[in-house]
Length: 257
Image 1 (spheres, helix red, strand yellow):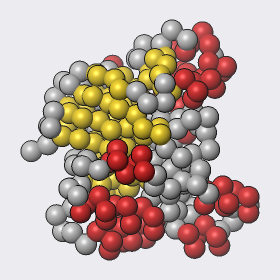
Image 2 (cartoon, rainbow, N blue to C red):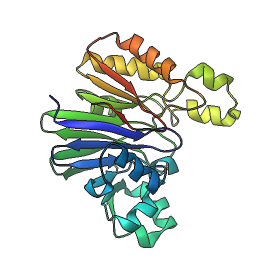
Image 3 (cartoon, helix red, strand yellow):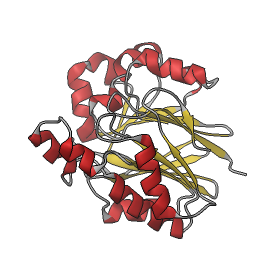
Image 4 (spheres, rainbow, N blue to C red):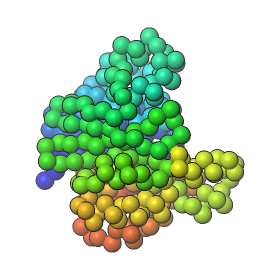
């Protein structure tokens, strides 16, 4: 029986936030959308923002930090962020952020309660972007979204993780045939963009071969993807009935485990 749980509060271009909790520790990875949306999502699953021990930010794009400014005016929760990513927050509202942000070098490890959280670099078009590997006793969780491709660092960080939150952003044909401007399509498909269903499926299959048992597909594009399409492509690649595969929603909490 797992000694932790993983719940996506919401996931997508409108906002991202994931709750990871153990018996005595609760952290959020990212805090997008708004403070109200974040608190409401927590309330929907019977939790409170007052229970959160720390927030870990992947990068400074608004769909990952949108809730922070208002949230931190009322709730003094430590926010862990790479220093290069923090520039935007400090420029926006230095008086709110400067005493509460925990600034880090790109590769860092932090212990919160019984969790050991270690960052790793991810390829994305931001000032800097990281994923996280979270160790809770013998269990290990991996988190990697907003990734243009699967790097060596991502492979190493997620290898051996029992549970993984992994980007599955777009179907390549839907993106190419969709309404996005050509330069935006190029950005999404680039090595500093977002991970396609195909690339996600290949990597998910590799992870399952080395022990991953729970996968949450995250950051699906509303216009350039379809949840059933993404699920079917990844599930076909995994072909393992023992794997727990779920899709995060843009609008409501989804519990992986």
